[in-house]
Length: 194
Image 1 (cartoon, rainbow, N blue to C red):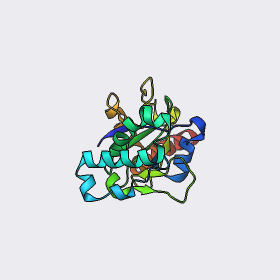
Image 2 (spheres, one colour; image 1 turned 135 degrees about the horizontal axis):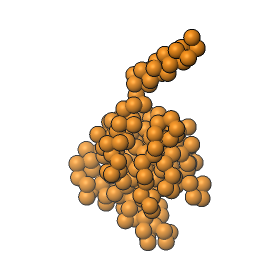
Image 3 (cartoon, one colour; image 1 turned 135 degrees about the vertical axis):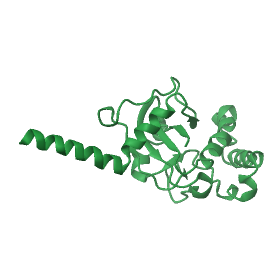
C-alpha cells in the first residue's frame, strides 16, 4: 500500500476539498487536458509515450499561456502518470496548501478508472481511483494529522515520513474497527449510567 499527498488548489476558485468530498473523487486540474485517448495498453506500458501524449495535448490547449510554457508543462506528465499509477488500496491525504483536510482509499486502479468529465465546467475534471469516500481529518476524532511538506506539493507526491502512522490511522477508521470502538464507548456509558 502506498500513501500519497494530493494537492487541492483553492486559489482562483480552482477546486476545494469540499468539492472533492461532494463529488467522491480523486481529481486533478488542467481542465482542457482530456487524456481519454492515452489510456490504451501502448501508452500504459510506455511512460515516454504517455508523457509525450500529455505534452502534446497540453501544448495544443495551453501553448499560448506563459504559466504552461514556464512551468506546468514540466510537471503535468509526471502528475498525471502518478495518478494513473494509483493502485486499489492506496491511501490519499488531501491537502489545501499545507493544511491536511482529509483521507481516502483508492477503490479502483488509476489506469482502469480514469474519467474525464467533459460535461462539467469544473477545473478538476480528470478523475482517478473510482468513487471514493473522503474522511475529514479531525484531530480530536482520528488523531493528529501528518505534517505536510512546508511548500505543499505540486499535484501529487509520496508521503513517506509518516506512512506507517497514516496507514494505522486508516485501519482504525475501517467500519469493523469503528463498530468495536463504538461498542467500547457504549459499554463505558452504560457503566456510568448504572
